[in-house]
Length: 454
Image (tube, rainbow, N blue to C red):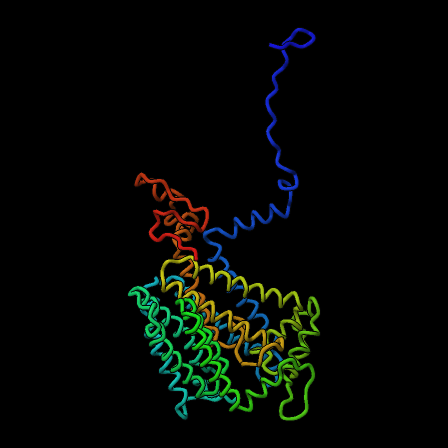
């Protein structure tokens, strides 16, 4: 053995362990990205996004309805909180519907598909009977319930098409019939065209556009081939062009795209231009809640179709971006629920509801920004209107129920909320089995329904 100069053997030193670079270990951006990605992949992420996002949009919408509708109510010799009280009542009823829908099993949702469709068709046909249907802004799509309360049955047609279409496609997929184009189209497309015809008789093209978007979303989720999808889209585009050409009102709305100043003549683009004025005067943080100028009679429909413009004026760019972020989170959560399920009905229904809410939000916000024609559709969960709020909140309850029904989410909720005073994780100790642990959305192969991330 070699020795040192002193005659003693050399000291054997342990090899040094490799030290990771400090740039990777101490990088705050990388650490934040890692933690965010882990949190984003948790079982209850979609559940919390849907529940929290929808409630925040509804509460913020109530605040903006109260602010935007005060002047309109006073001009009509009504109390300043008149529209707010009606919207608050609709929100409370909608919250009950949302809670009930979130607790219903999937089988009950499927059982409700045909009764809701039959009820929607009956009410939409009842609208066209003279003396029963009520015309609002040139569209006869309302039924008076007595007093100041009215209902718009076409809003419930959206929910009916989602539930019935999802149940129909799910049953055909179970029988492996969706590989044939006739089974994919019939009777889904004829039934959708029947609903569209009842809506267009009343002149409401905005709701018809949303129903068409739901139909395309269901066909896309069912795996419609490109040529079939393009064919249906071409037919819808031709029909839409004919309906626009034959209506001076719709042609006028199309001519107001990109308008920045009121024009003289029959097409003045007053509403579109003053919506842009409201957004432009808001700045970064807005003029303050309740300090809008455009709502003092300059901006028509300030608390309904153009409430997003009042939001931009009072809350500024920060407020409008917050609303956009909430809708984006809601849309992402819906896509996540639809993509991580093995139940075909859940996939079609979640995709249909997500298409409905996302398309309606895009059309409304695009019209306020001057990028799309004014279609007369409200901003979901945000604008004034109980007829639009009630079915939308029920649809949100569907998404919550589907998000809770995932095996990983069920296990996580069971561990966090023990029943009848039992300790967490102690539910399975009595049977000799250890409790399951779910770390991510990737479920174990022994689960009842394995994950099928698409």
